[in-house]
Image 1 (spheres, rainbow, N blue to C red):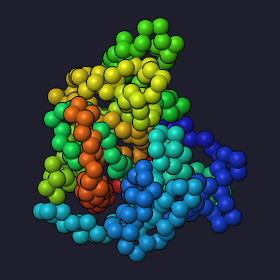
Image 2: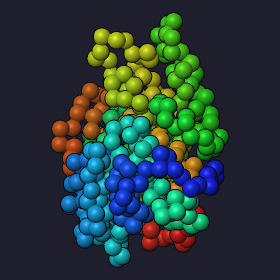
Image 3: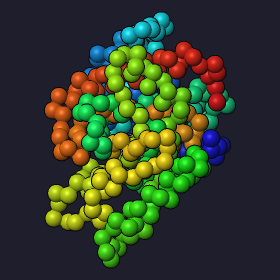
Length: 335
């Protein structure tokens, strides 16, 4: 955990709060946030989860395309039942790490800052945050609709580079070095950007990863564990070549698929646009984060799942069951 802890009080420019005590972008108050959170990119998906998985809604708010809802989820598994209802929040993260950076900072501020005094709280609950998104599978053997649980994320964006936190472990540091060398060697000859793409590797909280895999098994939903690569965009940053401008690193998706991270047989399973910063930022703060993203495309087979909403719904059930399991088994609530 990284502890920078600015003392505050935070100015109105640094922490905009409206006259009703709501944070600027999400437009909710601290009491309207639950410590168990689902993050989804699509605001429509946040609305769907709020309407279909949460009851007794305390808030359902939309502002600037960001939907946030807090209510109660009652989650049951195949072999076990979570007796206690789970108070949970679902929030839109938007597309990509720049939007996610705003949302995560506001969620953490709602949890950690006293809005009356604009100063950090002495104690606050540990957040459990799971991203439920969509992704493209990189391995040919992955069936469309398969939920992929992230063990580590490779950040090909640069958002994480603005937040200083130690590399999680020696394996992550090694993968950073190997990925940097691989991407540099793949750059176009004479590229002005050679050496300027700096991958960073973040790690999902192992307890969250374990809970997600257990919940998927309990619900009878086959899930796959592996690494996730997070691009800074959807097209060239994920190896798609449809523009009249050449990609600086051609065939990036193929290179990632073939890369062996040397982690007990795991491979880079999928690409998306958010997991890297999610794990980097929350992990550095000591909160627990993970990701489960169904494969709605297979990049090796060039296929796409046009009925992927069923897979997203299954992943949502898995994530809620995992959150409930983590909260029930939690022994301490403060950081």
